[in-house]
Image (cartoon, rainbow, N blue to C red; front, side, top):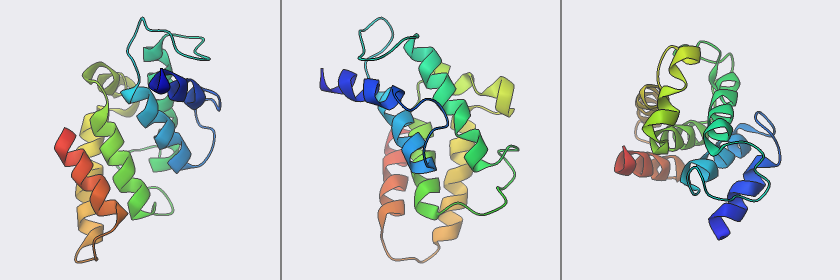
Amino acid sequence: PAMRHLAGLALLGGPGAGSLTDQVSDLELLALSPGEGRDRVGAASEPAEDLTARLLAVATAVGSGLKGRPLAPLPVRGLAQLAAVLTLLPEAASASAEPVWGCTAHELARHLTAEVVSRLGDAPLGPAHAWLALGSATG
């Protein structure tokens, strides 16, 4: 019940609403929430549609070219969180991005992870390292 409630709350803002951190957090909740066919608070459409809409909405934040770079570099913590959450996505949701992005969400996660590792260098341990560990444990 708690995860269904949290997933319902994630749906309230709509795709693309809020900061990148908010969008990625919503995507994470939907990725980890009960699957298709289960009741969710506030869900008007199928979970797969919600997840795909949220997934595609983060594209604006990471740059329309996706494999290119946004005009202003994203904070390394946000980039690490995004990479970890993209890794958590079910295969079908990951593949749903390919026609739009030109790559799956999992492929983008690998690219972002490499960028995060490069940017962290010898930085002291922090939240970005924790997101990298989570992403590597699930991927």
